[in-house]
Length: 397
Ligand SMILES: Nc1ncnc2c1ncn2[C@@H]1O[C@H](COP(=O)(O)OP(=O)(O)OP(=O)(O)O)[C@@H](O)[C@H]1O
Ligand SMILES: [Mg+2]
Image 1 (spheres, protein in one colour):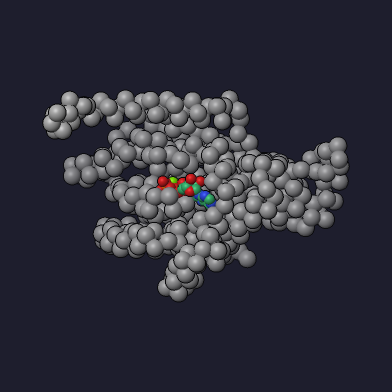
Image 2 (cartoon, rainbow, N blue to C red):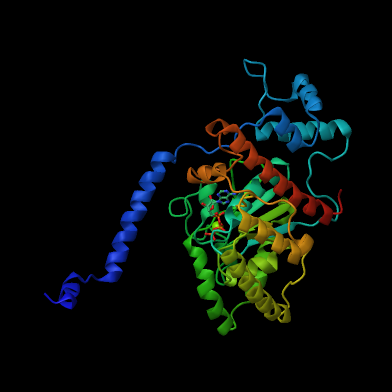
């Protein structure tokens, strides 16, 4: 038999084949997800040890013990130990501030302190944007700030991580697209959802966000866009800005209109980078393209100056020679525009991700103590360094 003939007989109609495969995959993946993480199981934050709670509140452990003994903390367990829920930490902050008569432990912005908008970006897929954004948003909320997380990625991994399945739980015009679309946008306040993390709200994402990429060139060509595309996110955020201290935007892995809009809405930028040759080369391209696009946007009146921008090294393996070398290389070039702390690679982060959880949600008993604690220490160092930048921007210590 002629090989070419055999091929022809086996030929399939590719569009049909792909559609069938996609359907089957999607179904099986959902079944699998449902098994390891049933939808009816409510997601929650984990309970925090006294040491962790004291650090989140910003007081010493001894003082926390005293306040808890006065009846402001959670009830002790049968072994006498107290574990703190996020809600307990919030309550104690309020008690402390009432006692002192000044706002200090409740860290909401005051006076002329402005809303800060952090965009987490890089067009390199898998550079750790979503993991960084999710843990940063939760960390800041646990520290008592009022946080809005926005999932700007049509793949919606951040939404899924926060328990909102993009295909099942997010309907039409329920992503940011609903508020920034050119025709009949809806108030952004109607799209915001609360989450199981106190102080943390979410605007979920799903595939409809892609519409913005398609509509923007059309709107621009037709001269329809009342505001330029790059101003739209910033504009809708002003409608709700008084409710929040910090907005964290998880960007998609491409440099389209969504990412450019997030760039222009932002007051600060976090660029995540995995310290490997190919990733760094790809980031270099990203920086060139971003810079060129920003010049165009700048000429049209878009924002191009920021309170701070930092590179964050992600999934760092300190014992990997080439990675350490690459990190040193970047430090030499970027200087203090690199965060001092890097996020280490850890099976705790990866495994928690499989069950759609963060390190602030998974039960630490699930892991080897050392593994979990090393990951958490690294994470808290990164997040608190970012918090320092936020506080400095507000002129706080
Ligand atoms: N510190 C870490 N240790 C181990 N695994 C990690 C770590 N950070 C991220 N990962 C894993 O790497 C993968 C990619 O991370 P993540 O989704 O955060 O990247 P991303 O930049 O948002 O990707 P995309 O470009 O697709 O949006 C995920 O499976 C995540 O669980
Ligand atoms: Mg992502």
